[in-house]
Image (cartoon, rainbow, N blue to C red; front, side, top):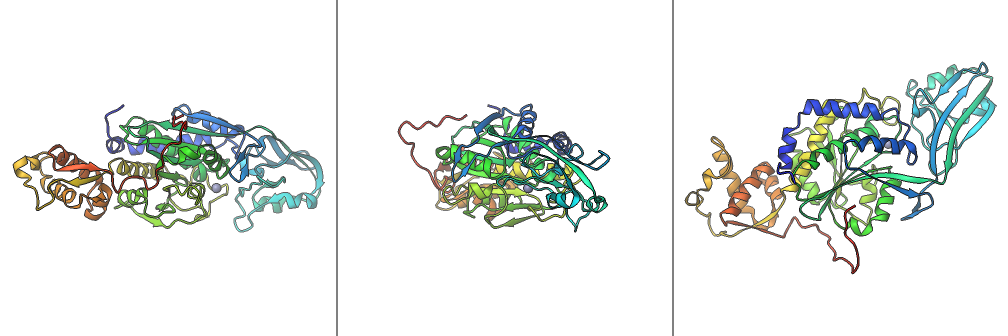
Length: 458
Ligand code: ZN
């Protein structure tokens, strides 16, 4: 395995370049007509597979997954509305948002009055195309700017949605990066939205580049990165991996990471999970907001459902619904900014790097301060000019290493960087002053393997 530490891999990233690369990836994926199933998801995953050792799973329609059923597969070939002269007045080739996702096929002639209930607009944002879906109720429809609707003359229209809604499968992608331990960190992002840049593709891009960075770093944890259709994809993964889910020690849902707003960390349902502490430490000094868990939002709703209660938070910028471009054609390539994508990636990696060094230690000479100078410890870590800080790191680690505080608790209380404390702890351990102990960093819920149960990573 690579020897570069994750915090070093993160520090080495050329943020300007990687921001542009993520934006270019988003631009490539933007035109694809994705939905919760179908070839759009497959094409998206195939593109990501150029960067990642991505395993693609296909789960047949009709499969029971927890309280849900995998729906028929939807594929769209063409969709349009033509006026009396045969001109396409609505054309899905111009934007994949023009058709209601999961529309049943239709081919008909009708008056504007008959067509009108199938046309969706945003009167308050008359220049934008709304994003609409009808996954679980058979329906068809088109979405268009309200201003365009007002221009349509009365008369006869020809309508075509050339789509198939038939038994097939639900597709999701999974990347597994093994580490020194079987404790897993889950990263999950949704891949079911069509031509929307921030909601969907920013998370896809940040998850992809986070995985690429993790792949070349030394890893204490194993990492599982999921690219799943929203809700039904996360539910499908949980249904198929219930025993494995118990290995998830920390997790982050990644979504909405490219807009110009500040970072938002939404805590896990537990609120006091290690990932919540890691986020608090990693986001210090950045403009950000921490919000409590609520059963509303992205796929943390599934991972944090009470039957799983996984320690999974959500990293985003402006929360869903909190910006006017949300779920409209204005969530486009101009809304997502390379600098915001790079900042989000950096924050994500900072949280993961913090978790990598979060160990609990016990001070083996806890009565009074041990004499550090006699052991040569003052010169042991850091470089010239950093002695005072390093001494502080040594003293904080010694003082709080009582078995009840893990490294990130020390980082939180001292204000010192986790990597700095990790260096200090390593030096103290080498000199026999600290011993690693199971303690505060152990995942709260562990269970033994059942006989015959397999723990293979896929
Ligand atoms: Zn959405």
